[in-house]
Amino acid sequence: GLERVPAGRALVVANHNGGILMPDVFVLSCAWRRARGTEDLPYALGHDQAMSVPHLGPFLEALGGLRATTSAAHEVFRAGHKVLAFPGGDLENFRPFRDRNRIVFGTHRGYVRLAIREGVPICPVVTAGGHSTFVVLDDGRKLAGKLGLRKLRVNVCPTVLSIPWGLTVGFPPPYVPLPTQMWIEALEPIHFTRSGEEAASDTAYVEACHAQVVGRMQAALDRLSGERREARKDALSRVAVRALDWLQERLDGKRERTESAEVIPLRAAPSRPIERDASPAGLASPASLASLAALDVAAA
Image 1 (tube, rainbow, N blue to C red):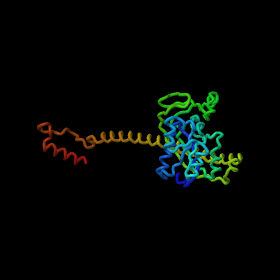
Image 2 (image 1 turned 60 degrees about the vertical axis):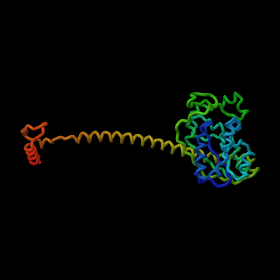
Image 3 (image 1 turned 90 degrees about the horizontal axis):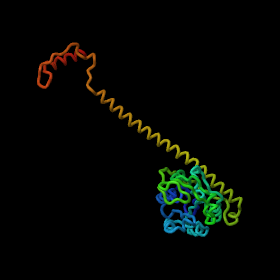
Image 4 (image 1 turned 90 degrees about the vertical axis):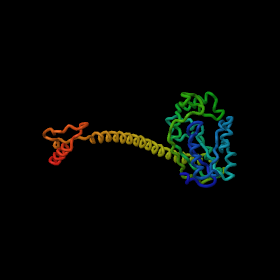
């Protein structure tokens, strides 16, 4: 659905998956670059803490990452480019596995205000399956509050099951992702009827726009999750059919080998023993072969 994304300025809004690996971001970026070119790639707004990590921050900046601030987004829009935002932040990125097919933006509304203030459309992008690369047992919101992490704009302290670290509490180090299929779709852009600072300060209007975005994204996630689930069933069915076909071929081959063995039908068997001349190596003489031929003709 990348052909639905308009040229020029736009706020790309996506659900967040997979913890610090964010596998869907890299898959989406590769597909986007191939389809629309490097110049059209959106600049991604990243969490302050992630952008502050040594080595990781500069690496993300080299890939087009920016600190999630209004001023940074404004500069990108002023240059005529796109911005990619994950309104769910760490709350959605570490949501429990049971909520993997839910859009979880919490109380975050800044993305809507940004789009309204800048007068740009929102282009929703939805991923199904990206959150199955590891298992979040609990997001640890209460634990994060007790530890005072919210002062750092960190809302979770998750309990995670991953490879090779096993069970960990807190943000896990880079892990080996579990095999998964990711279904990603860019939806039709959403254009708001109002723009500017006054509209962005209208709480009721912002909430209505937020509900429109989340509702459309959740409907798409439900559909993609269902299609992905059916595709997995089809894949298992294809494996089962191929296994049965392989077994049938083996059985058919064995049957063909059995039936190809030389067996004389009972009706063609001679009624009395055929006298054979003693010949080297037990071979039948020409006279014996003639008698056998005559018997075969008679039986036929």
